[in-house]
Length: 259
Ligand SMILES: [Zn+2]
Image (cartoon, rainbow, N blue to C red):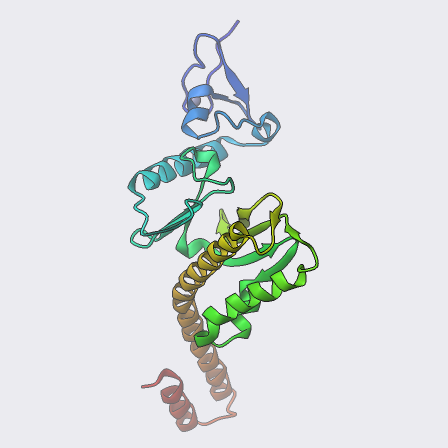
């Protein structure tokens, strides 16, 4: 039997000829290991992957392994979510505790975070809905209020089955999300563990809001700059069409650019 060659690393696939089928060619066990895919192998999914996909997975896995090593939490909540404000990323788990196995945690850069939600028994409050509707200074009260209002909705039910914070982030040009569970089994409303979960969820939301505010300032500034250039172009075309005078254009230009 001819030996198979790994399409990713170009080496022969070892004495047992272990290899896995890709959309074109094969991948060896070593490469899969380097891509963090051993232990969570989905053969059907793998068959749709190209050599480039595997190379990208290897890259991502290596990068996040390095990031995990340099991760220094500056703030953590219930060991379920940890923040590193220095390196600007967070580690979250959709299991109850953070376990340092690649598939059990998710490393998210602050600038990848797009939105977040608070979920209690299927009711959802999205940050853009909460924060967007309230003045900045009222935010802390605002989120707390939103959580309170949500919890109020289910007050007729004695038990809460699920409470989580969902982070929506961008990865590989795609929107993805992770649910961080604060309650994942029947918990009596008003009990101390219920209140603790509520408090932890609130802390998480406030921290996420803080991160989002800090990273949104930059992008809004860029938007503003783009806007003024766009507006100026509009005026330039009015000038070119002879609708406004050179003098009027120059005074608008000074006004818009603030010079
Ligand atoms: Zn290989």
